[in-house]
Image (cartoon, rainbow over all chains, first blue to last red; front, side):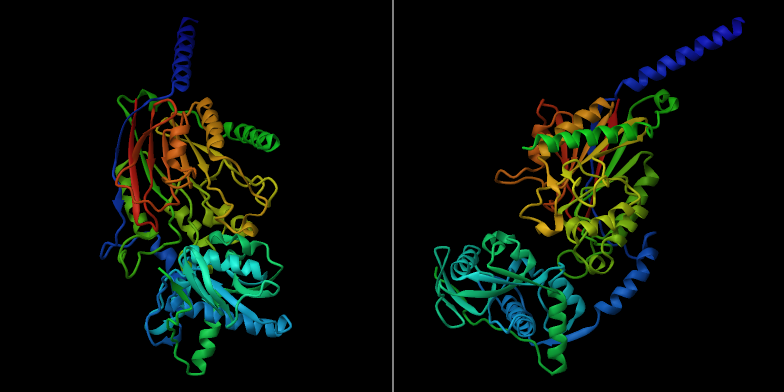
Amino acid sequence: MQFSFIGRGIATLALAVMLLACNQTKELVKYSSNYQDVVVVKGKTSRIDAAIAPYKKELDEQMNEAIATSAKELSAYRPESELSNFVSDLLREVAQKYAQKHLNNETIAVSLANNGGLRSSLPKGTITVRNIFELMPFENELVLLQLSGEQLKQMLDAISRRGGEGVSGCRLTIKDDKATAITVLGEAIDNKNSYWVATSDYLASGGDTFHMLAKPEKRVNTGLKIRDVIIEDLKLKNSKGIVIDAKLDGRIKDAK
Amino acid sequence: MGGLKMQNRRTFIRNIALGTTGLMVAPTFSTFAAKGKTKLTILHTNDMHCHLESFTGGRYDGKGGLTNLCRMVDKIRKQEDNVLLLDAGDMFQGTPYFNFYKGELMIKLMSEVGYDAGTIGNHEFDNGLEGIANVLPKAKFPIVNANYDFSETILKDTFKPYTIVNKAGLKVGIYGIGIELHGLVAPTNYGKTHFENPVSAALDIEAELKEEGCDLIICLSHLGHKYKGDDISDYTLAGATKNTDLIIGGHTHTFLKEPVALSNKEGKQVLVGQAGWGALMLGRIDLWFD
């Protein structure tokens, strides 16, 4: 009898201590930190290497395919650059082919490729699929927009405020953050006209402050990934023996 | 802003809280009997962007990559009893591994490395809501977010605002906060996801976690470290909250040498960390409790 009473007493006490402990939160009293660089250590493997290996093999086979040759390294910078000229010229050309098939052969007057979307340079010499993935990692699609003359002018002003972007089909001079001396396919913008512009779905949704592109007169989603479009076009040119090249032609000048 | 929306979230939180209470493990007696201070080691990453392997060429040649990070984490886990490995979002996008395997490989490997919790960054939306629905639920660690209202999307009921982890007899509450999607992510990619104010969401959740008796409250934030303008950052969150002890940040790819110690709304200390990107850095913060 007495034994079980004591036993019960201990159990109650233990429970009380546990409950007390549970209700009492602990205080953070001290900290220290150590931020370390992650580096390759020669000869050391990690336990996830084996899990990566089959994917790496499959990927490398596709990524290392040579698809073109470039006469020089193409890099992106502002106001115009070899790389942004190259990509925007290619986009306008491909968009025109698309329009020929699916859009009554309407003229694609201008193309726009944002410099921020060109994530890497293209090397001199052999260009692989991997180079194009590094250039264009995003799953952006080619979109065609019909803009009013006024909207097109707004787009060119936005380009000017940003110090230049990749364009094809037009020429302009940046002056006080505005586009001046504009020509589109060799002519001044006619505000009574509409113009077809080829760009990415990212910019067409108003990205990078191109708000005016989000409300076009018409919009055609081609469903073509820009990266795929570039790869296919390079392969096609390569099969014809064309070496990739691009040059500055003064399409965007900075007045300052 | 919409009282109805907020009401929905509160109801949601209440439901979640009811759901998790049953799963909580009571701290064992032996842990409390142990003398001296309790040590907890927090390891953290952010913006890994599918960098499974080290960089080749350029300024980061021979650095970074989840595989190398894994080796460091394993070593620390051997040395320390109580380790939590956390990530602050943007696991997706950045190498062909993402283009080919849609983030699924990344999530599989992060699960194998042994992440304890993660959150949703803006690049998690790169393949739309379907891209999230197809991949993130496969993670073997909880992915938490408290300020994206997915109730009108296919992600309804997919993510919890927070998780509670019991480690070393400590109750650790971990919640997630995401960045404004408008202007950053194509509208077609986030659909009817409603963005709720990060500060009010954080205040709600941290109060809830305090009520749950958490000893430590951690925010996994993809807001960005600090901005010149008015955009909400980890600095904003640190100064506006009352119960959050630690903010593990991301988005701005900030390489800190150590976590920044700031004051919260009540003058108490908050630590704000961030560890670069591309698994180029592993953040480590050791905490002692008494």
